[in-house]
Length: 354
Image 1 (cartoon, rainbow, N blue to C red):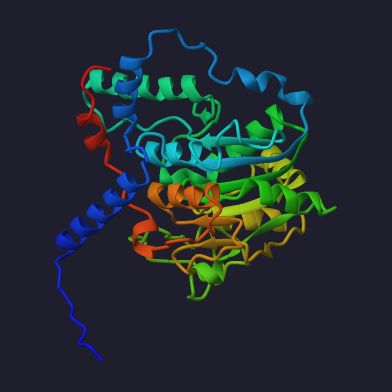
Image 2 (image 1 turned 180 degrees about the vertical axis):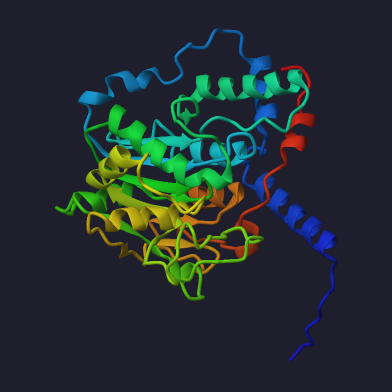
């Protein structure tokens, strides 16, 4: 047996090596570069010489008469996660490829620009957001009564439900996801079409597969998922679908929308709050192995939704399917995994002449 050699790298050296490998994959597959929202806006204003429509969501106007099999709401950070939105728009949620009875929206809420002291920078960022809304018509900001902060995810989702009930009342099933997922929409719709159950539906990835520890509230206020005893006094949470992706039927959405101002939430812990609210109408989560996350499971070809992916991972899966390869062809946990989003300061520094 030949000897096995190892090379020790610092964290900086490791990150550099991974970046190089990702860039090589991008070039080899002719994937577009990941641009920040300000970089993209600059390119758009350079290339476009025509006026965009003023009403960025004008296609919603006729929605009341439409029957939608599935509406997907994708939670996203408006200012920092533009690369994730573009990867999704250009792959599985490309509007021309979606089934006619499926709609996809990005849940943004009002952008948080309070940290920007320069009024010009403030306006340039908002101009970039408005340009994205005008070009794609799928980013919800002012339509939702909420602020775009991670600690307010619960409010973001409940506000989306309220908007959805008003604008798409004839929807059958709603899917809520993070912006790091690849969804096989065609297969998901086919599966939904075979079920006769369109009430009391709540399906997802059970949290004991996401978090092997006991489903107990975190009481340490320094932790990201801190839950105070005042907001939740019990020792354990009920089973709930993990936040990366879950499906609920329209009756569940209507219940939450109708009562959103009376339902108490557990801070920003949106997935737990949803489960607790649905217990009030005796709806319990059902586990689906077809919804999975990279943090706990390796890629499998029969997944319907796969979470924790970088834009490169999303594009790689789509490229596989376009060329008739397996969903997981050339899977690499590190290269396909999530990457840190650029900070708002970095994005602002990329603005030149919007």
